[in-house]
View 1 (cartoon, rainbow, N blue to C red):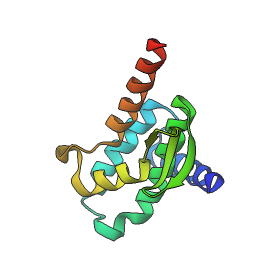
View 2 (view 1 turned 90 degrees about the horizontal axis):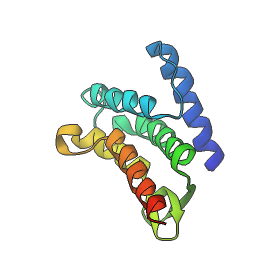
View 3 (view 1 turned 90 degrees about the vertical axis):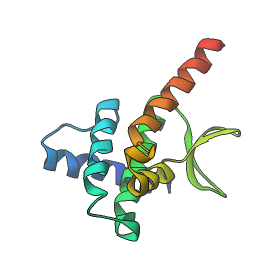
View 4 (view 1 turned 120 degrees about the vertical axis):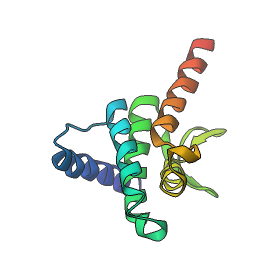
Length: 128
């Protein structure tokens, strides 16, 4: 599945990059742009209609986390997540689903999720 997630993320970068005219990649600016994309699309795609976008954007978000903060894809009882060790994991698909369902005003943002992971892991490395 890890390879499939990488392929989905690459497809998002290629397709959405071409449509937006931006050079997307595995970086903060691209996650921020995707966050705005979710906000714009959540009105059009609701419930199960959004699931295809949730899958592609979740794969992209997870790959961004791995590229910049480490971790590996792994599945557990909560679904697929990025695991940093046995006790710490992030669930990008769940976060994308929540933003589609609740929006930023409901407290759910993929960009905020991504930034929080960076802050937590930078703090942990500073404490060592």
